[in-house]
Amino acid sequence: MLLIATFAASINIFLSEAILLVNPKPRCQDIALTFRTVLRWTISIADTVDTEMTLVHPEEYLVFMNDDMKTSNDGLELIAKWEGCILKPYKDIAGLRTIGIGHLIKPGEVFPDGITITRERALEILSQDVALCETAIKKNIKVPLNQNQFDALVSFGFNCGVGVYSNSGVATAVNSGNFAGVPVALEAWSKAKINGVSQTVPGLLARRKHEAQVFMTPDPSCIISDYPVPWTKTSLTEAQTLLKKLGLYQLSIDGLWGPGTNRAVTEFASRNQVQIGDASKGVPPSLIETLKRQAS
Image (cartoon, rainbow, N blue to C red; front, side):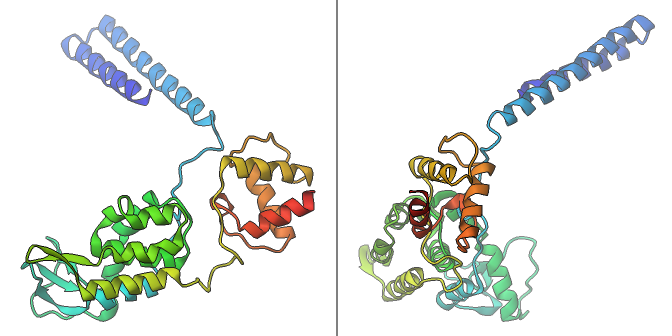
């Protein structure tokens, strides 16, 4: 609707200005004014329709899973360990000017030959370079991750390309919740063709094992006692029903996440002294079991 309104507005502006250019007499000025009035109506209607379309589903909004996560300092150090860190400009195996932790020097970036950067600066540049991996994880990984899991996946994609987050055994294992299968899936990416033959590269295998170890390490900073399980329509419908029995949820039971459900879940967790972070992404199974016991 907004596109149509923009097109109509452009036509109206063009016609009104053309009329005045060809004949600025009062009668033509009236016609031009008419076109401009239609323009205002068009924009007004577009604004109204767009607002109404926005309010049709006020509780629905687009967010990516793990949207608030960034690579930690430990994650950056993991990448640095395997990529290496050279503090002066050099040419990589492809002859491209590089500096720091595998950073390809882009046109316009000033890193003259002979300059030396600090390791802190190299890590800062790396934190910018991994943004592509972070965005791809948030877009393609559909389950909540802890910091160690996120860091391990960033290192994996930084080495093998962001396509691994949408089309690999690792992505399949993670998205299905089969975290125990991730180490084996990672090791499948430890081969390269040498003289036309696919062979395991010891350095790649060691990196994959390190990434697997980090992925499988519990995050000590996690603020919940057991791993959160993402909501499904069925589990959310059940939770709303139970919360309603306890008088915490007053709206219709529809299996959809929204402000009312968020308030009820957050209040229940607070009453039971459980910190759950962003409840829209899921809650620990123990909290659901507690809810079932209290509502029964």
